[in-house]
Length: 85
Image (cartoon, rainbow, N blue to C red; front, side, top):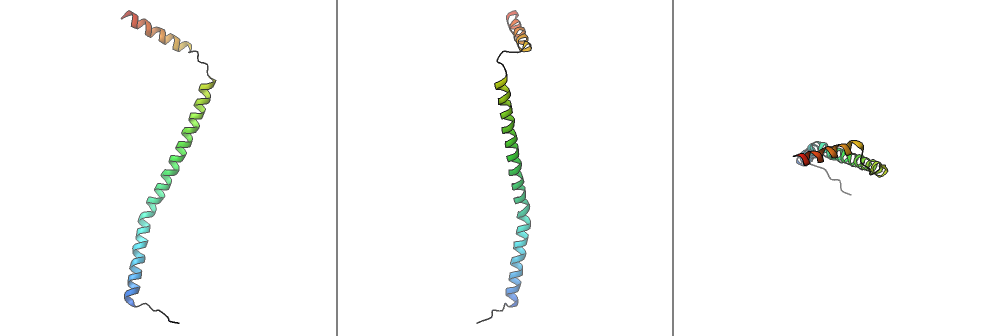
């Protein structure tokens, strides 16, 4: 059985490599957290939009197709303006 010892140059290289890896992790971690946050927000917005569309579809299917009095009045006024000009 052989025991492997590291000399000073190898220890310094290992420390340097670990320092570079630590700095890389410190720089990349906030970006990864931001990407995960953006994806979560996008998913929540998409779900809220889908829920809103479902509510609108339910409202529109329960409404009658007869125009309201205000719509009928406004369309009548528009047609009178077109005829008089």
